[in-house]
Length: 513
Image (cartoon, rainbow, N blue to C red; front, top):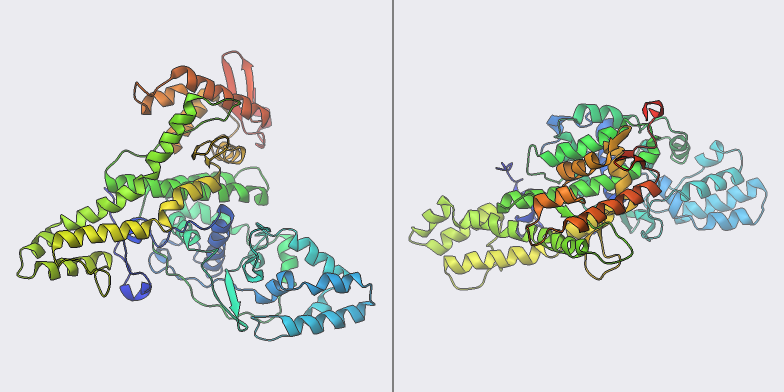
């Protein structure tokens, strides 16, 4: 049974008129983001805590999580609020003239900086052309370049400490924290990892990526010598001290960071698995709250024709998609059937006392929250309807949003959502679990035992009813996965009865058969 931590003080989250989604899953799961943005938000928190010597420190991961992320407004103006640079460079002016024209423009147009003085750049670069070439190169590493239109919400690749900063909105020359891209799930990931059993080892590995990279040193040249004034952040809340999903996420990340791939090649896999495990966390906790079985994911390996597995995968998605809503009702049922609620019903003013219980437990019942009949039963129904309506705004979409971003949920070949893992997710899972090689049947079992992914017939037999189970269809489904992994260079068949999933990036090549 899950044991929830105490909710934060109401004064810390005054904008929240209800505390149901947050108490079940944390503050907050936010659907309108992507795996990369979640990862960048996490890295900003981790960099701040590492700078303070508290990376994944258990004592500092509890509420409130306090950290001071970088803003790096000079760097961001130079990279993304600097459309004149290319035109000046194209004029072919003498070096001094080019610097004079550009410095005059940027110092007039820069926003959100305490002092509009960029003259330090001229001393750090041999020529204006070198400077312009560097900016062009760094802009080319922008994460999700086509989606973030506002210049203060664009992010360079996380080469290191100087490439990490928070999402901001700049109005009237004043930057303020923005929640559109960084909606706090990255802070939840940080807390999940801090509370995992692998936290100390993970801190050691992750810290290696903050300093020393050449591109990060180049980025440091774009900032002035004086340190910036950093602001305290941290109003996220994770309701559980421990959970298996925390350890699963940490285990996958630790394996990847200790692997043989270059660190920057690993980051996309960390981002994918971060979103994937957040999705699993939502469904797993929802199942525990609602008293249902832990979710499994019947996966279709897409082929040239529709198969029975597709319909089962659609059904699997729909069942899982209903878990969070059921958890909302179950959580509220636990309140309106509690001993405290029963005592409230026995008082002389049962409606007022029941309303007080809801104010204390889910922060609902004040002001205009309720205008119906003054009956406890009506009040109970109203809070459920209000909680479900609020849930449908964002948290209800996390399953499909994070699942789609991670490469598990897809509409490919159909109008309905179902589980159809893409190549990127398959690669990430293999790199996180296969040291050198693994028997294909063993690999299918691992996917089921560790993640709940159902692909082969043996795994399907464990979760489907007799009416649903089609052995031949799932054998063909597994065969399609085998062919796909072979195409990706991640599987070898040695004989008719012997196929191995392989990690082609492992340094232990000599250990292979």
